Length: 285
Image (spheres, rainbow, N blue to C red):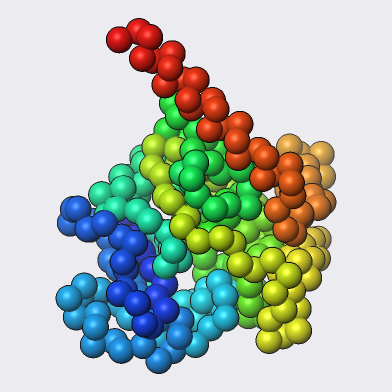
């Protein structure tokens, strides 16, 4: 069976505002759109102008439930045979169709397994290692955020099975997905700095308590414990191997919860670096 070259791009929608209003449609899409109405009660007739390939309307609280609903829906479509990658954008992320095309082209060229675009310097963010780095096309990473991730479809299907009780989606990016990748032998993970996305809204999970009675930090801890269990149950590699030691380092890493003051101050440094580079460049013109 030939490997599919088309991908599926999911964009969430609140069911009230103009759908896909943060997407700049400047080129024909080399992928299929799926609009996910997370209100579960949006007017789907309003999507006729966009004409997405797929529309899914399910009331959800956060990214973990969205991933679970997507998994159930895509199982009926045999999506693994039809799509190479699945990318998931929230409705507060600004990017163009041509940039998504370019992102997928680079991922196919580099044979990436899991990846994300870099974040613009004026984005709201949790982890500054994903902020755009000028001069780089692709930089390897141990993991990518659940904010705007791209996965090979078989990797998505493998980890989504374990997200049923995770509402926020936190913890699956840092712990679960890298564990599944390691077990599948598909660990080519990167941030694509040739493409940028802007996150326009402050991160809102924080100390929020979800309907399961848990906070995002508690769900991170559950994902960490689950990932360690999966590794112990299925691992057959030597404990001395670099790959095994690397996944252990990830699984033993403590997650920070809310953004620290140091992280907030860290936003200033890349900005000054960019200003300096622009001044240097200008002096040579």
